[in-house]
Image 1 (cartoon, rainbow, N blue to C red):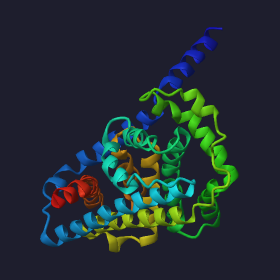
Image 2: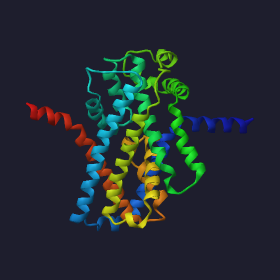
Image 3: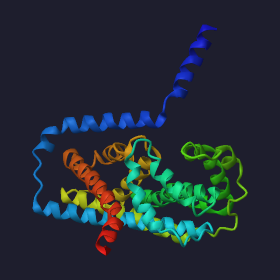
Image 4: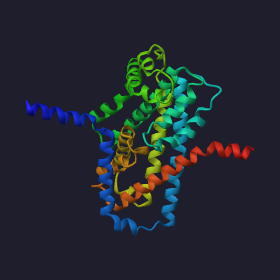
Amino acid sequence: MNQIIRKSLVFGMISKINIKLLITLICFAFLGNSIYGNFDSLSNQIITSDQMLWLFWGGVFSFFSIIINAYAWKLLINNIGCSINNLNIIKLFLATNIYKYLPGGIWHFVSRYKTLRLELSNEKSIESILLEPILMLVAGFIFIPFRGFNISVYILCWSSTLLFLPEFRQFLIKKLKELKAKAFTNNDNIEHIYLSQNSRDVSIRMFYPYKPLFVEIIFIFFRFLGFLCCVNAFSLGSLISQGELISSFSLAWVIGLIVPAAPGGLGVFESVILFSLGSHLPEAPLLTSLLCYRLVSTVSDILTTLIYPIIKLFKV
C-alpha cells in the first residue's frame, strides 16, 4: 500500500512539472557546458571584415524572411474567408513580432488577437492566430528529410501537409481552441468555454492554403540562408552537405517553435544544432556561428519592427 502511495506521489509531482521549462533548462545546461568547454577558443575569436560581410548578408536574409512570414499570414487570413480592408496585416505582424521574446512566448499572439477582434469575430480571430504556427511547423517539416533519402522520413514529414485538409483542419482548430483559448481570454473579458466549444464558425469550405504554405516554405528557406551565411562566416559550410545542414536547421527550428519556454526558443535551437552537428563540425566555430546567428536574427526582428515607424517618420 505504501509503495502504491509513493508511486502516486511521484507521478503527481511529474505531472506538475512544466515539461517545456524542463526541456529548456536541460538545453541551457547543455549549451552552457559547451560554451564553458570552448570558452578560450570563443574569447580568442576575431571577427574579420570578410566574416562581417557574411554576417551582414545573414542579417539581410533574416530581415526579409520576417516580411515573407508576415505576408504568409496575410494570405492565410484571406484563405479562411476573412477580408480586412481597414487593417494592415503585415504591419500588425511586424509590430507585434518582437513580443515573442517576452516571457511566456504568447504575447505576440495575444496582441494580434486584441487587434483582429476589432475587425473579425472572436472565432475567426483565434482561428487565424492558431493556424499560423501550424503553418510554420508544416513548412519546417518539408526540409527535415533532406539529410538523406529515407522514404519513411519523407512520408512522415510531408504527410504533415494533410493537416490543412478541411476535415483535419476543422478537428485541429477545435482541439487547439480547447487548449489555447484560455491564454487569450485570460487577457480579455470573453468566456473561453464558449470559444472552445463553439466550432460552428470554423470554415469547412476553406480552400487548401497552397499560397500561404508555399510562401511559408520560402520563409523557412530564407531563414536557413541567414543561418548558412553565419556558418559560412566561420568556414563551416564546405565541411558538411547543404542537405544535412538545412535538415538539421529545420529540425532545430521546429523544436524551438514547439518548446518556447525561453523567449524566441533561445537555447533550444542552439542545443539541437550542437547535438545533431557537433560530431560533424568543430565545436568552437559552430558555437560561434550559432551565437552570431542568434544575434543577427534578433537584430533583424528589432529592425523589422521599426519599418513602419520609420516610414511614418519620413512621411512627416
